[in-house]
Image (cartoon, rainbow over all chains, first blue to last red; front, side):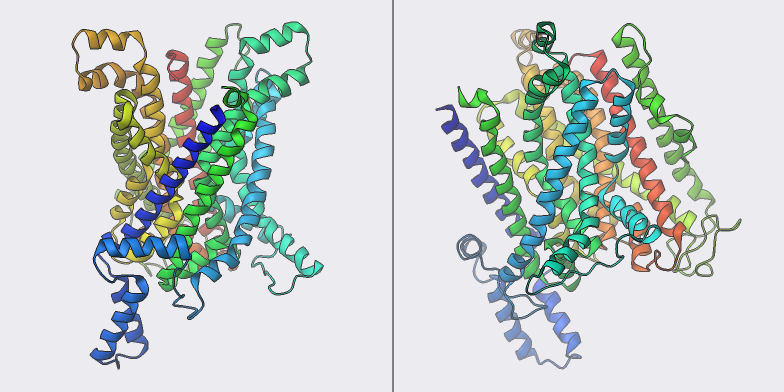
Length: 333
Length: 301
């Protein structure tokens, strides 16, 4: 019964987050003082050197408003927006790559982003927790403080600084990796896969370094606190080895808040991934967003942000659904 | 500006002295962390706020000097491809970033404290609805929203609109933490005592709970300064903030878009990296230093 209530509650939260998130995305452009339709018409005008007649402009405006879903009062717009996004997964065509549909562009980029993001997050989380556990469990030893110092040094450094530094060090001063990576498209062959892997290493290293520091510090603090618990003292008096105490007693218990923290920090991890993609020209959602933002391709931007919200919320839900498997207190309530 | 942190051996810094009582070694650790952090902040803060009065020209004006001059006595870090003095641009960048960070942190702290305390103390349906919004704001990835806003209002934005947007989307983390603390305080005896003595909700929140939470609010404030500087810089690096204003992000934006790496203009790209890392380390050491000090002083967590 405990598990059922937990899952139901968590699923309700998921739907609520999606609903509020989509509503915010819907409201944002309508609260802005700027009308993207005007901006786009201005763009067309300047491309046509101002030769467009006012009838043509009016027709373009009607078309665009139809395309953006700007017809009717705000409530009708809202309902048709939800229907288009949730049921049809349709964001209209891209302006820059007309008439390619936005959903296809995003679905093409999604595997790239997910592949990089999931691998890097997983490595950073596992490594960071291992280092943090050792640093916390042996916190009275000198060497452990050195481990923590790595975390202190890495954690406050922002993503973009890490990315630029990694680029500077590993592609310029020590030219191990290419400065401007190439990602082959089309039919996959072993060579192409190898090239993709090689070119993905730099953004991957950046993401791992960025996640690493936080995991060390957080796990270290948790492990120090858990080491003071009476049940760990009891295990020590019972004669269990250091290794057993560290893994079975301290780690099992310190792990739970770390899983929750991972679920909560997914949004930030995702932000970092987008930024890393932009700086390294990695062909994921982040790069699409950057191109769309500079080119004023609003349909693509809305598609990307909607998908981002859905992806992050879903990943959080998955982690929370795994949680009862790790925490017996929920299973046996 | 990194002399203070270099003077301290990193290993010694993180290791408590072997004193018998654990508590006193803890306090010693806090002093050093906080000391190093505050020193960095003081040097960078005072430096960036006082030095601009001595600036020869406004560094954001382009073509004030010859382009691409090397490091020299007249231009300590040389000039960039836009004819701006890199040293003065950096000083103004630190000042602007710090100012934005502090203003945003004030806004975020006020909103987060009010929301967090009231949700945690009042509880019930009010808390559930508020927490739903808090969790949503935490879950929604901030950067895509900022990119859309940046693309929509680009060119028509002021530097402080960017700050306002960061406040609107940045209050949720702190509110969550403060609410958790208020929640644990709600059950304490002295709160009941105050209530039975006839204190109303606002009185209890302001006079009984706030003093306990205030320590965390200070730590949260510093962390939010860090977060705000970081967020604005991130936007600037991808060209969606007001990049004409010198900030720690816009300087890197210009360096990257003029390919400072290819043309070998190291100071242009390395100087802001060193400055950012030092500043962020200073902020982070200060916040963890305070945190440890308060944690050992009071049993609130």
